[in-house]
Length: 407
Image (cartoon, rainbow, N blue to C red; front, side):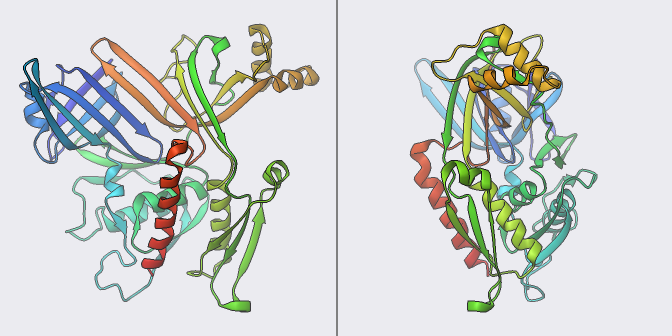
């Protein structure tokens, strides 16, 4: 089922990993994933993996599910054995390590303050990548073998305003405004390829529930919104400053009004300011996070019926409520067709928690004895542990400070 290969710095396969204790993979949606591999120190794969710029390629049923460089080899020896633990990221890390310059072929950076591009979200992202670290980039910045998939013009029309923005930060914003697109970097042959795609909405096809026999465990959290009414300030000073406002009426009715101010004094373009408002409302909306342990069945299986970035449905009963399997099947059928008995569907829904969201990451543990798969479903920025909230706040503060420093 799984094939694991070692690649060298030129992306050639130089060894196959056959003798290993465990491989942990965490592919993530629109964010660099990670991997950890435990292997004996004396195997051929270990000799290749300890070399700088080496990496791995992991295939599942013939399809690449992760590729990326190693970043940390760790050796442990005792009287019981000699083991190497290699850690790394997937190839999206190349975007995290580089930035979009205001003048892609600078320095100097005096010809323009920002690299402003407007168009379909996919087109804008690929143009930034190509001109900065792709085939049109300066020789010292260019990432060898990094290609861009043929542009399909996916997404809504967006405007990017780049000034030393990290590519992950910039592309996450553009992908969200562009219609929640997905982006990734995977190895194709001996090249890395940047791809943009539209995640599949499978909420009427892929259902998980303990009652259906395809869910053995779940952990579900819901966080109140950070804001549901936003004011954005554009260019200008005092009474001459452009100010726009927008709210999420459904959220306001449920939680009350929670206000936020977004500083965008770097632009007076109304469409950009509206884009900033929509992004703020989306990023700071009510957050759900659901970690599940699914069981592959004949009806639903990972890699065949759903994958990273897809939108799926999870049905769990409300506390102290009981729903039998026949009733649940009727409810699912109502999602796929126009229900005959609307009132019955309403009564059933009152007993259920219906979560429809994106598969944000998939935790995969592979051993010689098999695999364990745990998808994590939720809204953007919902996956941090509650105790780590302070670090999330610091990250947002740092982002705002960085925006000021780039000016």
